[in-house]
Amino acid sequence: EHHLAYTMMFRQLPFAEIAQGYALLFFPKMPDLKHINIDFKNPLKIKARDIKYKDKNREKQRIKNAQIRREKNEAEKKAREEQEAERRKKKRKQKPKRRRKRVHQEIKEEWEDLQREANLMKKLKKGKMSKKDFLKAVGEASDED
Picture 1 (tube, rainbow, N blue to C red):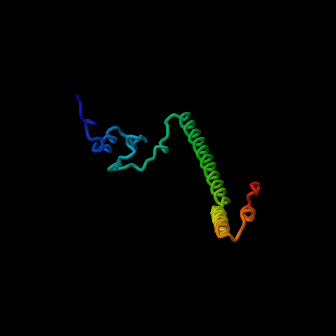
Picture 2: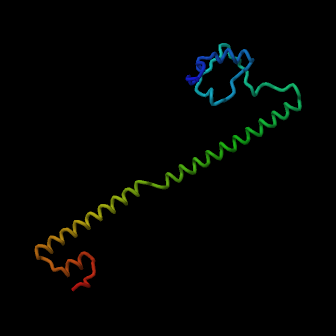
Picture 3: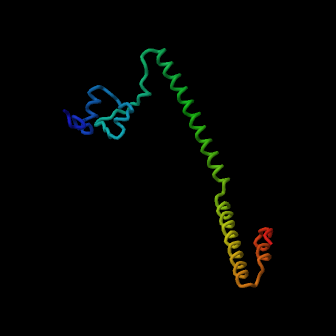
């Protein structure tokens, strides 16, 4: 039975030398290589998109596809920027400070009402106010008497 999680140290492999052995100019984007820093000793100043096909028809198709891809990317970027601007605009319109003030004001009014009712209850207990007057002041109907 095999107990090791891996058979070799993947991060310690000489990826730059392996790539040069296969005549690679760059590594493909892969999730496995995402966290590995690969430094070529003598990097070439050539970009993959600058390499042309020998066949004229394939080169025309490559240029056409690259142009379509570029336009699509620009359109998507513009749409994202518009959505972001719209989201920021909506966020500015919300004005959360007013909401906080309104909620604070409501809480303050509730506490004032509670304080007023507590004072009325004290008056009722001391006999300075009748039950009918208390119910009227509190806002409850006096159907009991």
